[in-house]
Length: 227
Length: 141
Image (cartoon, rainbow over all chains, first blue to last red):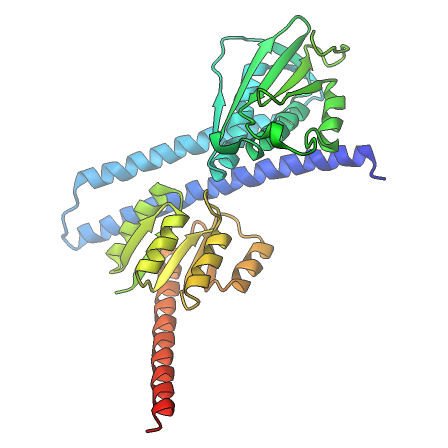
């Protein structure tokens, strides 16, 4: 029998590894664009040295391209930094809106690879919960990953949240093929371990094609599904 | 002049790379879609296909497999952000000519394209010779 602690540790490492591998891959793509842009500038320089006139607009295009890639890299490294700092403390207060924004940022490349649109519902709700930020990110990723697998022809996965008295409900929508699954595929042992860690519960609404995560406002407080 | 098909989902990379390769006297066709790449490779004869390993729609290895199924002699060079040994071995088993990590040195890539062009010419010549030999044997001249 597999030890539950081992599943938890393996899941944590797998999640961290998957995210950092994806981030480094994307940074490599950005570096490749900047590298070729620098090379193109060198080409223009050689042409200019030979007396071939260079249209200043072409230089402008390259400079804008580099700026856009630096901004893209800045967003990616900011996400990486937030993920890295999520293990600083086992539990602390985290904003739900910020947590979901980070989750979408981290999952974006995986969604792009599967031609799926991730839609985070805009919210002015500044709710925060006392929880384990890293384990919460891990669980939201597992939910998004599963949702993308069963998003069907709609190929759109939504993310939204509502605040209750003692809990926050995070809804993942767009799981069009959820009702077609022959046997329950979610949550697996991996997610169950995370749920226990977060003192949270999960419900599936097969008809609506949604998964609901009920997260206590305080990880140490007992949780009932409708609180 | 080498005829190259460049396939990558990063449009900015494609545009910049294509401009640089064209400045080096290569005839470059680009596409961000692996499916379109398969179509183009069937319609046109390329000296080399430069293929990104990770793309939406179809991943690079899947695209490589399809390209080689349709034309086993096609010279495919894979470009990747991070090449794991496992992926590299898999790519070579599927018939990739080479695998380069991004950001790639254009000098090295150009050399590999030229090598691919030469290899293609040798294969074309070999096939023509085989055809002639076959005709000679059949006709009994």
